[in-house]
View 1 (cartoon, rainbow, N blue to C red):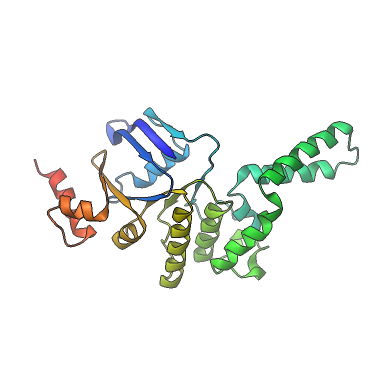
View 2 (cartoon, rainbow, N blue to C red):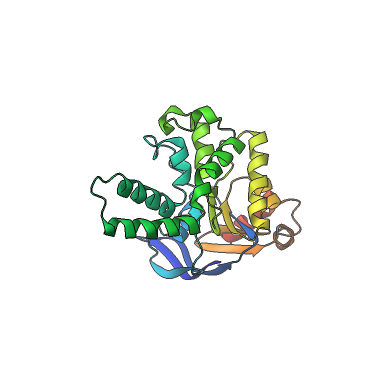
Length: 266
């Protein structure tokens, strides 16, 4: 579970959101919608700890792991595709790197042996021996053929990079998953596959938050939907509840437009 208490983010006089107190619970997928510039992506970045809030706090259930769908498609250009996926679990990769460095030492000491033993135990607890096969399965499932798994990210097309970063976010089955526009840049067939993966994670008891510009995506995937507007996270409800609150709007898009208009009118 991930929750916020009095969460506020302000840049100068501009308030992106104010006093947001909310709980996101396991087994649910939450959708956050809003106009461009409303602060949807920024809200996820605050939850992820990438941006310090002006006030308030973010709390995650102790022992749970959070993962984020990265949006910088060029950040891993010099990294091998398979390793990029495994970097979705940074602690696991750090253990792998430290183990490799220890075992390559010519003057391997007793202290090194004790440290290696500790790392091996932690590695086993994380199911580390299945890390590479899992990364390969994710890549294959997202349409990245095996011949590209050991290439650098710079050698892939932009669409392929999106798929690899999605595999990175899914790697290691995180407890809390933040997805910023998860189907952006995907073709219709792959979009359906991504939706199926998100449903599978939700049904497995994970906590998922996604931002999207696609109203049908929010309606089909998210049991609860909110829209960020004028510094507030509004109308956290089911799609049916939001449509009813907007005067029995025919669909979520019409509800969004009506509720946005209400905000603008005194």
